[in-house]
Image 1: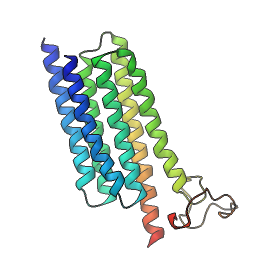
Image 2 (image 1 turned 30 degrees about the horizontal axis):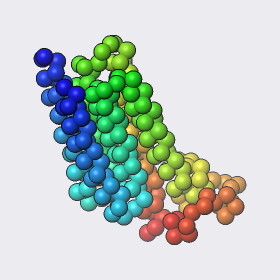
Image 3 (image 1 turned 30 degrees about the vertical axis):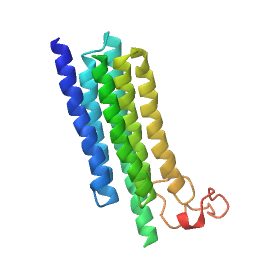
Image 4 (image 1 turned 90 degrees about the horizontal axis):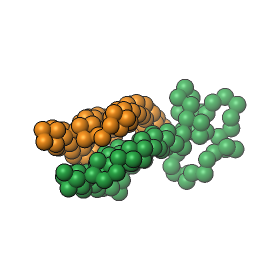
Length: 96
Length: 113
C-alpha cells in the first residue's frame, strides 16, 4: 500500500510540472523563453512520472526500460532544444 | 489503482490541448515545432501511464515515441536551413560553398524564407 501512495504523489508532482510546461508555452512572450520553459518543465515532469511508475513496475527489466526512456527523453530534449533555438535565431536574423 | 493512472492520463491530455492552442497561434514556425515537441513528451507520459494502467509491454511504445519526437525536431531544423543540410556552421544567408540554393531548394513557399 505505501508504494501506491508514493506512486500517486510522484505522478501528481510530475503532472504539476507538465501543466507548468504547458502554461509556460502559452503565457511566455518570446520564442526562446517558451522553448526554455517547455524543455525543462516537461523533462522534470517526465522524470517524476517515471520514478513514480518505477514503484509499480512488475520486474527489474521494466524499471530498466523506464530509466532508459527517461535518459532518451533527456538527451533528445537537450539537443533538439538547442537546434530549434539556433534555427529560430537564424530565422530572426535573416528576416530583419 | 489503474483508475488513478487513467485519470492522470486524461489530465495529461488536457495539457496537450494547451499545446494545440500554441500550434494554432504560434507566430514563428519554431513555436509550432515546440508545441509538437510538447505533444511528443506528453505523449510519452500518456503512454507510460496507460502502460501502468493496463499492459507493461507498452513501455517499448513510449521508447519509440520518445525517439521519433527527437527526429521530428531534427527534420524541422533541416527543413529550415538554407540548403536543407541543417549544417550548423553554414552562414544563414549564403549556403555552404559549392551548393547553389536554387537548384536543391526543398519545396518551400517563397515567403517561408
